[in-house]
Image: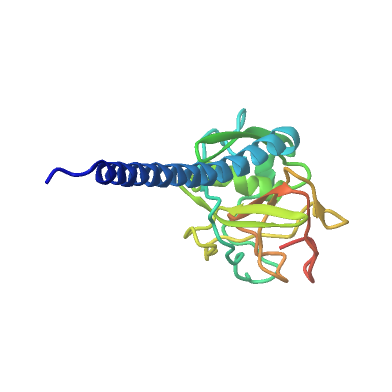
Length: 226
């Protein structure tokens, strides 16, 4: 028996429904992917805008550090620990602060294939800037990741440069003391600062953080921030 008109219409309705549901699923997947990509892009754009305006990290032009360091970051990164405490009051494996030559170093830091203009003040933070220069010379930062993304109301930073990509310190490298910490504990957008262990002013190492939202970070017993 040939299918009735009602049967044909019902079958066509079911086919249209399946086609609609399939299109909806594709649309939802595309929307989710775009939303995820936009989150990553927004984080990158914020950092680009602030660094270009306020701090401009890694292709150090006109000096000994002319390599391009390319750590990558991810908006899905989770917070991890800062470097473990060092032998208080000592430097290990760090270059002499005179390497910074007391001048401003400019260049680019590449995150997720996005080049960010940066500048580092070798007069205000000679030891930290010398550490960055040495890391570039040694190509330490190439391929390193940003393992920590911290964002809340009035606070936002990404932390990069750990030896293992998980926040671990380099046992053969640490230095101090804390340099040029803000007196009011407020870090403006675009600040690049060293990460360290709580209570230890000589646990600075390869790790640094970039502030993408004006952040208040209280000082501890060592002074400055961690």
